[in-house]
Length: 122
Image (cartoon, rainbow, N blue to C red; front, side, top):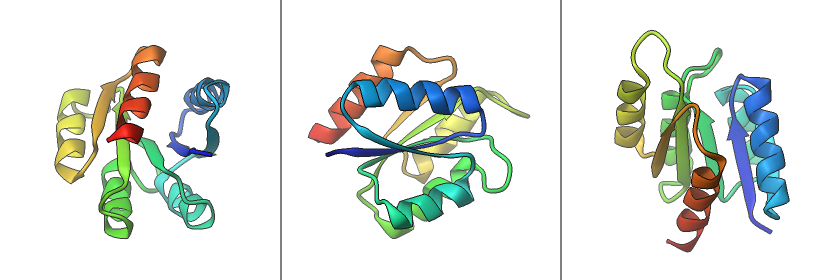
Protein backbone atom coordinates (compact mmCIF):
# COMPACT_ATOMS: atom_id res chain seq x y z
CA UNK A 1 0.00 0.00 0.00
CA UNK A 2 1.21 3.50 -0.81
CA UNK A 3 2.42 5.46 2.21
CA UNK A 4 2.29 9.26 2.53
CA UNK A 5 4.11 11.26 5.19
CA UNK A 6 2.56 14.63 6.05
CA UNK A 7 4.69 17.16 7.94
CA UNK A 8 3.05 20.34 9.25
CA UNK A 9 3.01 22.23 12.53
CA UNK A 10 -0.71 23.03 12.19
CA UNK A 11 -2.75 20.18 13.73
CA UNK A 12 -5.85 20.84 11.62
CA UNK A 13 -3.82 20.58 8.38
CA UNK A 14 -2.29 17.30 9.58
CA UNK A 15 -5.67 15.82 10.45
CA UNK A 16 -7.38 17.09 7.30
CA UNK A 17 -4.70 15.61 5.03
CA UNK A 18 -4.56 12.38 7.03
CA UNK A 19 -8.33 11.86 6.72
CA UNK A 20 -8.36 12.95 3.06
CA UNK A 21 -5.69 10.48 1.98
CA UNK A 22 -6.86 7.61 4.18
CA UNK A 23 -10.28 7.99 2.55
CA UNK A 24 -8.47 7.65 -0.81
CA UNK A 25 -6.92 4.36 0.37
CA UNK A 26 -3.41 5.47 1.35
CA UNK A 27 -1.51 4.81 4.57
CA UNK A 28 -0.71 8.16 6.18
CA UNK A 29 1.85 9.07 8.83
CA UNK A 30 2.04 12.54 10.35
CA UNK A 31 4.78 14.63 11.95
CA UNK A 32 4.74 18.12 13.49
CA UNK A 33 8.14 19.28 12.21
CA UNK A 34 11.02 18.27 9.98
CA UNK A 35 12.98 16.50 12.72
CA UNK A 36 10.01 14.32 13.57
CA UNK A 37 9.35 13.74 9.87
CA UNK A 38 12.89 12.50 9.21
CA UNK A 39 12.64 10.13 12.20
CA UNK A 40 9.24 8.87 11.05
CA UNK A 41 10.59 8.28 7.52
CA UNK A 42 13.50 6.22 8.86
CA UNK A 43 11.01 3.88 10.60
CA UNK A 44 8.27 3.95 7.96
CA UNK A 45 9.61 4.99 4.54
CA UNK A 46 6.98 6.88 2.57
CA UNK A 47 6.37 6.98 -1.17
CA UNK A 48 5.45 10.68 -1.07
CA UNK A 49 6.22 13.47 1.40
CA UNK A 50 3.92 16.47 1.87
CA UNK A 51 5.68 19.12 3.92
CA UNK A 52 4.95 22.62 5.11
CA UNK A 53 7.76 25.13 4.68
CA UNK A 54 7.44 27.42 7.73
CA UNK A 55 7.71 25.27 10.89
CA UNK A 56 9.57 25.36 14.20
CA UNK A 57 12.47 23.01 14.97
CA UNK A 58 13.43 22.02 11.40
CA UNK A 59 11.72 24.01 8.68
CA UNK A 60 10.60 22.66 5.33
CA UNK A 61 13.43 23.70 3.02
CA UNK A 62 16.01 22.01 5.23
CA UNK A 63 13.73 18.99 5.51
CA UNK A 64 13.36 18.76 1.72
CA UNK A 65 17.15 18.94 1.32
CA UNK A 66 17.64 16.11 3.85
CA UNK A 67 15.03 13.90 2.20
CA UNK A 68 16.66 14.47 -1.21
CA UNK A 69 20.03 13.44 0.27
CA UNK A 70 18.43 10.24 1.60
CA UNK A 71 16.62 9.50 -1.68
CA UNK A 72 17.10 11.83 -4.67
CA UNK A 73 14.08 10.30 -6.45
CA UNK A 74 11.66 10.86 -3.55
CA UNK A 75 8.50 12.72 -4.55
CA UNK A 76 7.89 15.77 -2.36
CA UNK A 77 4.99 18.22 -2.28
CA UNK A 78 5.69 21.52 -0.51
CA UNK A 79 2.89 23.64 0.97
CA UNK A 80 3.07 27.12 2.46
CA UNK A 81 0.80 29.84 3.73
CA UNK A 82 3.66 32.30 3.99
CA UNK A 83 5.54 33.64 6.96
CA UNK A 84 8.01 36.49 7.10
CA UNK A 85 8.00 36.57 3.30
CA UNK A 86 5.36 35.76 0.69
CA UNK A 87 4.53 32.07 0.29
CA UNK A 88 5.45 32.21 -3.43
CA UNK A 89 9.07 32.91 -2.51
CA UNK A 90 9.12 29.94 -0.12
CA UNK A 91 7.55 27.72 -2.75
CA UNK A 92 9.99 28.86 -5.46
CA UNK A 93 12.82 27.94 -3.09
CA UNK A 94 11.17 24.57 -2.39
CA UNK A 95 11.24 23.82 -6.14
CA UNK A 96 14.95 24.65 -6.23
CA UNK A 97 15.52 22.25 -3.31
CA UNK A 98 13.74 19.46 -5.20
CA UNK A 99 10.01 19.64 -4.48
CA UNK A 100 8.02 17.96 -7.27
CA UNK A 101 4.88 20.07 -6.70
CA UNK A 102 4.06 23.16 -4.62
CA UNK A 103 0.79 24.50 -3.23
CA UNK A 104 -0.16 27.73 -1.49
CA UNK A 105 -2.41 27.39 1.54
CA UNK A 106 -5.33 27.22 1.40
CA UNK A 107 -5.33 24.62 -1.36
CA UNK A 108 -8.14 22.59 -2.91
CA UNK A 109 -8.25 19.04 -1.58
CA UNK A 110 -9.03 17.61 -5.03
CA UNK A 111 -5.93 19.32 -6.49
CA UNK A 112 -3.77 17.79 -3.75
CA UNK A 113 -5.21 14.30 -4.38
CA UNK A 114 -4.65 14.73 -8.13
CA UNK A 115 -1.03 15.81 -7.55
CA UNK A 116 -0.33 12.71 -5.43
CA UNK A 117 -1.92 10.44 -8.03
CA UNK A 118 0.12 12.07 -10.82
CA UNK A 119 3.38 11.76 -8.88
CA UNK A 120 2.75 8.09 -8.19
CA UNK A 121 2.39 7.39 -11.91
CA UNK A 122 5.51 9.33 -13.01
